[in-house]
Amino acid sequence: MSEILSTWPTVDIVFLVCAIAGGAAFLIWIALQFVGADLDTDVDTDFDADFEASEGSGSADVSFTLLSFQGLSSFFTMFGLVGLAAHREGDLSSFLSVGIGSIAGLGMTWVVSRLFKTFNRLQSSGTLKMESAVGQEATIYLTVPESGEGKVQLTMQGRFQVMPAVTDGGERLETGTRVLVVRVNDERTLVVTKL
Image 1 (spheres, rainbow, N blue to C red):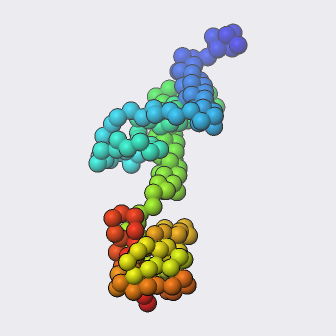
Image 2 (cartoon, rainbow, N blue to C red):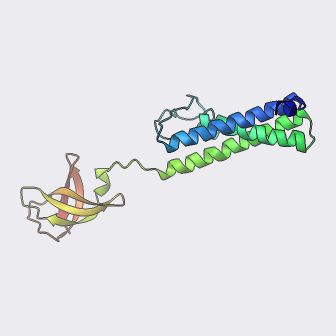
């Protein structure tokens, strides 16, 4: 192997090292993600994947920034592969091969950033926002007494829920009665009125 590489120009060796290092780093990162490793490898920058200023992207969710581990490894992988192909197979000059490799690396970084943004939009926090129930119709699950608490069933944020409820009008609401949620009381109890 060293005999083959000794006949290669230095620029080809640089392309090869970039491709191998970038690809290996990305594969190791993917493997660690599959086994559950929590890798927070983003570099704190003021640039997001669209190459424009962001409004403080310091959140702990899965994010992609220009100088993230994923961005750098995808850039170097494509830079190395395309640059090597352009120089060796395309017989282009070193300068032109570096330019084409850089464009390919930036393009791949952009594609990976789009993938991360798409994946980010698919995730949800799972936090139930009680305010989303206001204005929703529900059905009494357990009788709501005049001055006590019962339960209602309704669909909130795409999930079927059974929530504690009190009556707004001071009247007893029997099981099966259709009601409307008018407000949220103390962050955990729904206030309902008969439809």
